[in-house]
Image (cartoon, rainbow, N blue to C red; front, side, top):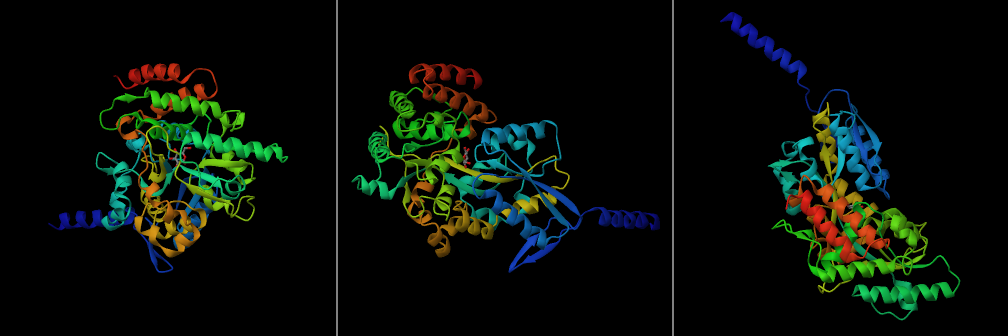
Amino acid sequence: MLKKLLVFALVAVVAFAIVPRNIQAQDGGTTISCGTDQEVTVVVGTDTVGTQKELMLEAYDEFMAACPNVTIKALDLPESATDRISLYLQFFEAQSSDIDVMLIDVIWPGDLAEHLVDLAPYMSQEVIDSHFPAIIQNNTVDGHLVGIPFYTDAGLLYYRTDLLEKYGFTAPPATWQELTDMATTIQEGERAEGNTEFWGYVWQGNSYEGLTCDALEWQWSSSDTRIVNPETGEIEVSDPAWLAQLDLAASWVGTISPPGVLSYQEEDARTVWQQGNAAFMRNWPYAYSLGNAEDSAVAGKFDATVLPSGEAGHGAATLGGWQIAVSKYSQNVDAAAAVAVFMTSAEQQKHRAIVGSYNPTIASIYQDPDVLEATPIFGSLYDVFVSTVARPSTISAPHYNEVSTLYFNAVHSVLSGDQDAETAMSLLELDLAELLGK
Ligand code: GLC
């Protein structure tokens, strides 16, 4: 009996010594969980687009001030989502612990789930329920919450209110054809006045994930089809209205859009726009606060709205957005999860909405007066944000990234004039059928 007791006591002492305990720290009125009382370093894959890096570093400092035992190190991520997933796959393949926390795109939970930690046990049900249920569902794979929603995204049409007025237009374009005509008129007028750098419409035409987003908006607004049908798994890339829409988009290259648009990502379009050299831009909400910043030539001269309609009779906004995930190969999962929980909290989301116009994933923040004052589109475009079109990632998992790569390469070949839409899409259909075993 005594021996048994001794063994029990020894086990208890050892367990107490080796199981890292949590620290709860105070930050203003909020309690932060540090995840551990050990000295640890957590490496966080950090965004470099727009104001994102600045905002993320600010949050790391706040966390480290509350939890001095945790050091957060930023690992700069490439700007392109396509390059980011290649980087992550390299880390995962090597089961590397060199990255603990990472931003994952809304399209990746299904593709990356096997490498990610279930974060639900680190959160209260109340906090989980405060996020948009569709995003929680999107991020839940086989019952595991593999990413906590960080911000959501939706494609928008930015337009110059001053130039619309100058050229006698009373409203932004309702259809893609109208956009083409208005952009042509404004571009001709501005060039005639001496601005030879001026373009009608800038968007994302590089062959990468961003082009899948732009093209899906053309496709859904013209034909109500979306690459792979999310319910039936049928491949849907050949609707005639979509083919005509894609040919129209190809006609923009070198006319209302610069030839270089074929290598544009978000930041390239935003640079031209913010220099005052475009009438219209397709971009995400983050461009709203930057467009109104002091150094922007278009501050106070633009607004944003839903993208134009095609044959289907409605516009479309692709659902984007990022989640914070923790790698299974991390050696500090508890601290990493604490960082993920902190970064996605309502306080952080509100701050990011005000300073960077990053869309919260917590519905109640859209009613916050400070948020609405700083970023009025969160009120005026709320309906657009909640009626987005999702890329077919869940139905294609774990092959979504391959599906998208085939799609954006095919679309790019049409935009660059290598093939017409009909040829490119019929070849794409064969490639997708082979990939998805149809
Ligand atoms: C934005 C979106 C993301 C999308 C990417 C494409 O970051 O939030 O979902 O995949 O743009 O460039």
